[in-house]
Length: 297
Image (cartoon, rainbow, N blue to C red; front, top):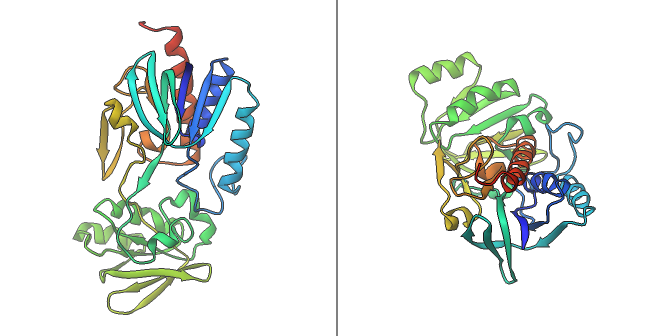
């Protein structure tokens, strides 16, 4: 029996496990190695690691964790979870089941990309979700926003700080007031739907339904997301949904609605970055530790 099982060994999960390891608790990390930023060449915005490849950051985290003799790491998919506080069971797909007193869910999210040919291939390379993570490197070049919902207006209002912006409205045309605000920011509105995208040198080529091609340094969109793992649903954890993003509901201490289950990182918050994930993991790990000391208080 482990004190805590951490499902997901990316930035949030590793940060949670580190707090628990340093609390001298027996920790199991189950990690499938499928990080959201796995397509990106480099990670930005995290102090001391700005510009570092994501795999390198994750590799350092794993190596540092495994220096603690009370940490066990399993490479695999945490496929099923059941039980209750002090007596949880997590089954690894194609492997064994393991027991734990507490669970930390750090299993990430899935981006539900629109059905635009070529977009999947460019995701994380020249098509991005976060301007803070990728905007600076586009060197104030021509950039675009692919509308995927009414909330895309917010992203389009932000982007002119990173470059000359075209808002590909598609089926989400801005209101007259929003159009005026975009114009005041210097953004151009393109109403013709996007037919496809493709790599174009260091950037991306956007082909419109009328055959025109627009070349950009980068394309941004904020697609809907959902938890990547069914564990929270299996355990009965409540979820929230905001602007098409579904995530596990937690309190300020990253505790879910199910006693003994904590959640952190992208799967448990609106807004995502490596720094947010690490901070969430620190909170979830330390809260899980304290819950075993002050149980019932």
